[in-house]
Length: 267
Image (cartoon, rainbow, N blue to C red; front, top):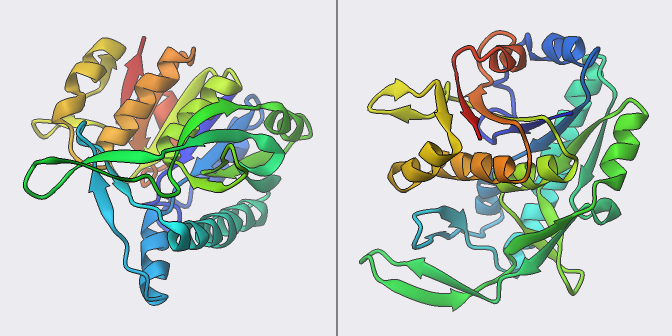
Protein backbone atom coordinates (compact mmCIF):
# COMPACT_ATOMS: atom_id res chain seq x y z
CA UNK A 1 0.00 0.00 0.00
CA UNK A 2 1.11 3.57 -0.75
CA UNK A 3 -0.05 6.64 1.16
CA UNK A 4 -0.08 9.92 -0.77
CA UNK A 5 -0.24 13.26 1.00
CA UNK A 6 -1.54 16.02 -1.25
CA UNK A 7 -0.26 19.36 0.02
CA UNK A 8 -2.57 22.33 0.32
CA UNK A 9 -0.57 24.19 -2.32
CA UNK A 10 -1.66 21.75 -5.05
CA UNK A 11 -5.05 20.34 -4.04
CA UNK A 12 -7.20 22.91 -5.83
CA UNK A 13 -6.37 23.02 -9.53
CA UNK A 14 -2.59 22.86 -9.81
CA UNK A 15 -2.05 19.11 -10.15
CA UNK A 16 -0.61 18.15 -13.52
CA UNK A 17 -3.39 16.86 -15.83
CA UNK A 18 -1.52 13.54 -16.17
CA UNK A 19 -1.97 12.85 -12.45
CA UNK A 20 -5.25 10.99 -12.80
CA UNK A 21 -4.10 8.69 -15.60
CA UNK A 22 -1.03 8.12 -13.44
CA UNK A 23 -3.23 7.11 -10.48
CA UNK A 24 -5.30 4.77 -12.67
CA UNK A 25 -2.13 3.06 -13.89
CA UNK A 26 -0.72 2.64 -10.40
CA UNK A 27 -4.03 1.23 -9.09
CA UNK A 28 -3.62 -1.77 -11.38
CA UNK A 29 -0.88 -3.07 -9.08
CA UNK A 30 -1.04 -1.01 -5.88
CA UNK A 31 -3.54 0.12 -3.29
CA UNK A 32 -3.60 3.85 -2.60
CA UNK A 33 -4.70 6.04 0.29
CA UNK A 34 -4.79 9.83 -0.04
CA UNK A 35 -4.48 12.30 2.82
CA UNK A 36 -4.92 15.98 1.97
CA UNK A 37 -4.09 19.37 3.36
CA UNK A 38 -5.66 22.71 2.55
CA UNK A 39 -4.58 25.22 5.14
CA UNK A 40 -4.58 28.10 2.68
CA UNK A 41 -8.24 27.51 1.86
CA UNK A 42 -9.05 27.43 5.56
CA UNK A 43 -7.31 30.78 6.01
CA UNK A 44 -9.09 32.32 3.03
CA UNK A 45 -12.55 31.17 4.12
CA UNK A 46 -11.90 32.22 7.73
CA UNK A 47 -10.90 35.70 6.54
CA UNK A 48 -14.08 36.00 4.48
CA UNK A 49 -16.05 35.08 7.60
CA UNK A 50 -14.22 37.75 9.57
CA UNK A 51 -12.16 35.32 11.63
CA UNK A 52 -8.51 36.29 11.34
CA UNK A 53 -6.12 33.38 11.74
CA UNK A 54 -3.24 33.28 14.19
CA UNK A 55 -0.09 31.29 13.55
CA UNK A 56 2.37 30.23 16.22
CA UNK A 57 5.91 28.83 16.24
CA UNK A 58 7.10 26.06 18.56
CA UNK A 59 10.56 26.05 20.20
CA UNK A 60 11.51 23.44 17.58
CA UNK A 61 10.76 25.96 14.83
CA UNK A 62 7.51 24.34 13.62
CA UNK A 63 4.86 26.84 12.49
CA UNK A 64 1.20 25.95 12.97
CA UNK A 65 -2.30 27.40 13.12
CA UNK A 66 -3.67 28.35 16.53
CA UNK A 67 -7.06 26.64 16.68
CA UNK A 68 -9.68 28.11 18.99
CA UNK A 69 -13.33 27.00 19.14
CA UNK A 70 -14.48 29.10 16.18
CA UNK A 71 -11.47 28.12 14.10
CA UNK A 72 -11.98 24.36 14.56
CA UNK A 73 -15.54 24.78 13.26
CA UNK A 74 -14.28 26.59 10.15
CA UNK A 75 -11.40 24.13 9.77
CA UNK A 76 -13.78 21.15 9.89
CA UNK A 77 -16.18 22.77 7.41
CA UNK A 78 -13.51 23.63 4.84
CA UNK A 79 -11.33 20.53 5.17
CA UNK A 80 -14.05 17.90 5.32
CA UNK A 81 -16.56 19.72 3.15
CA UNK A 82 -15.11 21.95 0.47
CA UNK A 83 -11.66 20.42 -0.05
CA UNK A 84 -12.33 16.75 0.63
CA UNK A 85 -15.37 16.58 -1.64
CA UNK A 86 -13.64 18.55 -4.38
CA UNK A 87 -10.82 15.98 -4.46
CA UNK A 88 -13.24 13.04 -4.37
CA UNK A 89 -15.37 14.56 -7.11
CA UNK A 90 -12.35 15.15 -9.34
CA UNK A 91 -11.12 11.58 -8.85
CA UNK A 92 -14.55 10.16 -9.70
CA UNK A 93 -14.77 12.43 -12.75
CA UNK A 94 -11.50 10.86 -13.91
CA UNK A 95 -12.71 7.29 -13.52
CA UNK A 96 -11.26 6.56 -10.07
CA UNK A 97 -13.44 5.04 -7.35
CA UNK A 98 -12.94 7.35 -4.37
CA UNK A 99 -14.64 8.00 -1.07
CA UNK A 100 -14.00 10.86 1.34
CA UNK A 101 -13.73 10.45 5.10
CA UNK A 102 -12.26 12.32 8.04
CA UNK A 103 -10.06 10.96 10.78
CA UNK A 104 -13.22 11.01 12.91
CA UNK A 105 -15.05 8.42 10.79
CA UNK A 106 -14.65 4.92 12.16
CA UNK A 107 -12.45 6.34 14.96
CA UNK A 108 -9.67 6.28 12.39
CA UNK A 109 -7.56 8.97 14.10
CA UNK A 110 -7.66 9.63 17.84
CA UNK A 111 -5.69 12.46 19.39
CA UNK A 112 -4.98 14.00 22.77
CA UNK A 113 -6.02 17.61 23.07
CA UNK A 114 -3.06 19.80 23.93
CA UNK A 115 -3.95 21.60 27.15
CA UNK A 116 -1.03 24.02 26.93
CA UNK A 117 1.29 25.06 24.12
CA UNK A 118 4.84 26.34 24.43
CA UNK A 119 5.50 28.92 21.73
CA UNK A 120 8.20 31.39 20.79
CA UNK A 121 7.01 34.99 20.50
CA UNK A 122 8.25 37.69 18.12
CA UNK A 123 11.06 38.56 20.52
CA UNK A 124 12.31 34.98 20.57
CA UNK A 125 11.05 34.31 24.09
CA UNK A 126 9.19 31.19 25.14
CA UNK A 127 5.57 31.55 26.30
CA UNK A 128 2.89 29.16 27.50
CA UNK A 129 -0.61 29.60 26.04
CA UNK A 130 -3.88 27.67 26.13
CA UNK A 131 -3.85 24.67 23.80
CA UNK A 132 -7.14 25.35 22.03
CA UNK A 133 -8.39 22.58 19.75
CA UNK A 134 -5.08 21.22 18.52
CA UNK A 135 -4.35 17.53 18.93
CA UNK A 136 -1.39 15.21 19.20
CA UNK A 137 -2.15 11.93 17.44
CA UNK A 138 -2.42 9.07 19.93
CA UNK A 139 -3.66 6.16 17.81
CA UNK A 140 -4.72 5.01 14.37
CA UNK A 141 -7.45 2.44 13.72
CA UNK A 142 -6.84 1.22 10.16
CA UNK A 143 -9.96 -0.98 9.94
CA UNK A 144 -12.14 1.41 7.92
CA UNK A 145 -9.27 2.23 5.54
CA UNK A 146 -8.57 -1.46 4.90
CA UNK A 147 -12.30 -2.09 4.40
CA UNK A 148 -12.62 0.67 1.79
CA UNK A 149 -9.43 -0.34 -0.01
CA UNK A 150 -10.54 -3.99 -0.12
CA UNK A 151 -13.71 -2.86 -1.93
CA UNK A 152 -11.68 -1.04 -4.58
CA UNK A 153 -12.01 2.52 -3.25
CA UNK A 154 -9.30 5.12 -2.83
CA UNK A 155 -9.94 6.64 0.62
CA UNK A 156 -9.43 10.42 0.72
CA UNK A 157 -8.86 11.48 4.32
CA UNK A 158 -9.06 14.95 5.84
CA UNK A 159 -6.83 15.60 8.87
CA UNK A 160 -9.33 15.97 11.70
CA UNK A 161 -9.07 13.76 14.77
CA UNK A 162 -11.41 12.82 17.60
CA UNK A 163 -10.27 13.80 21.08
CA UNK A 164 -10.68 12.02 24.41
CA UNK A 165 -13.89 13.96 25.08
CA UNK A 166 -15.11 13.37 21.49
CA UNK A 167 -14.23 16.90 20.46
CA UNK A 168 -12.95 17.61 16.94
CA UNK A 169 -9.23 18.42 16.83
CA UNK A 170 -6.98 20.02 14.24
CA UNK A 171 -4.00 17.80 13.45
CA UNK A 172 -1.22 18.48 11.01
CA UNK A 173 -1.91 16.88 7.62
CA UNK A 174 1.65 15.75 6.98
CA UNK A 175 1.92 14.05 10.33
CA UNK A 176 -1.55 12.55 9.95
CA UNK A 177 -0.38 10.99 6.69
CA UNK A 178 2.73 9.61 8.43
CA UNK A 179 0.70 8.02 11.21
CA UNK A 180 -1.81 6.58 8.74
CA UNK A 181 1.05 5.13 6.71
CA UNK A 182 2.41 3.52 9.84
CA UNK A 183 -1.04 2.33 10.92
CA UNK A 184 -1.88 0.61 7.62
CA UNK A 185 1.68 -0.72 7.31
CA UNK A 186 2.26 1.07 4.02
CA UNK A 187 5.40 0.35 2.07
CA UNK A 188 5.86 3.95 0.95
CA UNK A 189 4.59 7.43 1.66
CA UNK A 190 4.68 10.26 -0.87
CA UNK A 191 4.40 13.94 0.04
CA UNK A 192 3.24 15.78 -3.08
CA UNK A 193 3.87 19.51 -2.96
CA UNK A 194 4.78 22.41 -5.28
CA UNK A 195 8.56 21.85 -5.21
CA UNK A 196 10.72 18.94 -6.30
CA UNK A 197 11.91 17.99 -2.85
CA UNK A 198 14.04 19.17 0.03
CA UNK A 199 16.40 21.90 -1.10
CA UNK A 200 19.68 22.61 0.70
CA UNK A 201 21.88 25.39 -0.67
CA UNK A 202 19.58 25.66 -3.72
CA UNK A 203 20.09 21.99 -4.56
CA UNK A 204 17.45 19.26 -4.33
CA UNK A 205 18.66 16.49 -2.03
CA UNK A 206 18.02 13.33 -4.03
CA UNK A 207 18.60 10.75 -1.31
CA UNK A 208 19.20 11.11 2.41
CA UNK A 209 19.00 8.81 5.40
CA UNK A 210 16.71 9.03 8.40
CA UNK A 211 19.67 10.14 10.52
CA UNK A 212 20.63 12.89 8.06
CA UNK A 213 17.02 14.09 7.86
CA UNK A 214 16.85 14.47 11.64
CA UNK A 215 20.11 16.40 11.68
CA UNK A 216 18.84 18.76 8.97
CA UNK A 217 15.49 19.49 10.65
CA UNK A 218 16.58 22.57 12.66
CA UNK A 219 17.83 24.30 9.51
CA UNK A 220 14.78 23.66 7.30
CA UNK A 221 12.33 26.50 6.72
CA UNK A 222 8.62 26.73 7.50
CA UNK A 223 6.43 24.33 5.54
CA UNK A 224 9.09 21.87 4.48
CA UNK A 225 10.14 21.18 8.08
CA UNK A 226 6.81 19.47 8.79
CA UNK A 227 7.14 17.26 5.74
CA UNK A 228 10.64 16.14 6.68
CA UNK A 229 9.53 15.54 10.28
CA UNK A 230 6.59 13.47 9.01
CA UNK A 231 8.94 11.53 6.74
CA UNK A 232 11.10 10.59 9.72
CA UNK A 233 8.07 9.60 11.79
CA UNK A 234 6.74 7.36 9.01
CA UNK A 235 10.09 5.59 8.71
CA UNK A 236 10.26 5.08 12.46
CA UNK A 237 6.80 3.47 12.29
CA UNK A 238 7.98 0.89 9.76
CA UNK A 239 7.39 2.54 6.37
CA UNK A 240 10.20 1.58 3.99
CA UNK A 241 10.52 4.82 2.07
CA UNK A 242 9.43 8.45 2.44
CA UNK A 243 9.44 10.63 -0.66
CA UNK A 244 8.93 14.37 -1.15
CA UNK A 245 8.18 15.44 -4.71
CA UNK A 246 6.27 17.80 -6.95
CA UNK A 247 2.67 17.32 -7.99
CA UNK A 248 3.19 19.79 -10.83
CA UNK A 249 5.29 17.52 -13.07
CA UNK A 250 4.07 14.96 -15.60
CA UNK A 251 3.02 11.64 -14.03
CA UNK A 252 4.00 12.94 -10.60
CA UNK A 253 3.39 9.78 -8.59
CA UNK A 254 5.21 7.45 -10.98
CA UNK A 255 8.00 10.01 -11.15
CA UNK A 256 8.42 9.88 -7.37
CA UNK A 257 8.21 6.10 -7.24
CA UNK A 258 10.98 6.01 -9.86
CA UNK A 259 13.05 8.40 -7.69
CA UNK A 260 13.04 10.98 -10.43
CA UNK A 261 13.22 14.69 -9.46
CA UNK A 262 12.40 14.17 -5.79
CA UNK A 263 13.89 13.61 -2.33
CA UNK A 264 13.96 10.02 -1.08
CA UNK A 265 14.46 9.41 2.65
CA UNK A 266 15.32 5.87 3.72
CA UNK A 267 15.98 4.21 7.09
